[in-house]
Image (cartoon, rainbow, N blue to C red):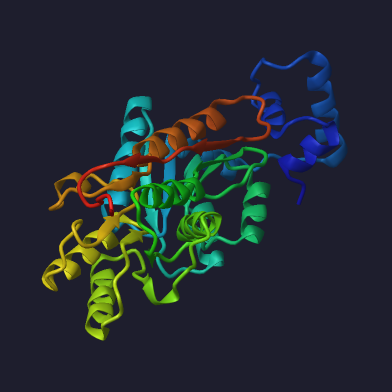
Length: 331
């Protein structure tokens, strides 16, 4: 079956240009219009009226596709996206895929009926992203570098965040620094920043003080409890890959009579809204979560409103250090 993309390729124009010509939108030159109509005639293209009807019904609706909605991080992100949609007059639909395969996530996106999508789900493999390209749906990926026709990405520089945290702890005099892992690409980048800084200062990486918390407070708490019960010597400081795990770490240390930050410093990551209300308030790396939501949504609006189509862009956001009360200079 001949598609509108085939017509665009034959005429050597953007898909949006073909759409404008077929819908009588007078924004193209007579020469371009003739190229499009000649391609339509040559390929015997027949517009899909059902698809056109569906598109008219999905106007001003965007989809936010997430792997989870648990925790303050997702709450802040959703709030930011929702506010931008409200200001712009768009309806927001939220789709959650926890254990879904790439095929299922891809099916969820294309069957959603939305006009454009924001996708924050690393389970969607590259091959399925290429299939989405063929659909010509405007898409913005969060924390995943991808750029293509009608596709952009907004990324927080988590490697930089990992280096900022570790450099800060070393400047405070800490030399034996533990790490508590999360479970995704963001964590891998934070951990690489941590290890690169340790290597830079000639500090050995001690596997006995590297724990796995899966980004969950209770799991990090349990890992710390086990470590303490085993009598493994505690480090000078822990760098935790998110704030929830930092709080789990602090709870376990407090219950064992180990004072934070007097005996062990603890650094978090994300700066969720509750971080300043922890006891003690958490020193952490600020992830610009609200900016991430705002920027991703406004970039999608730009793609939706660009008549000529064309390539998307990559936008990088910088993390920053937030100093509170869970880290202390080690003399």
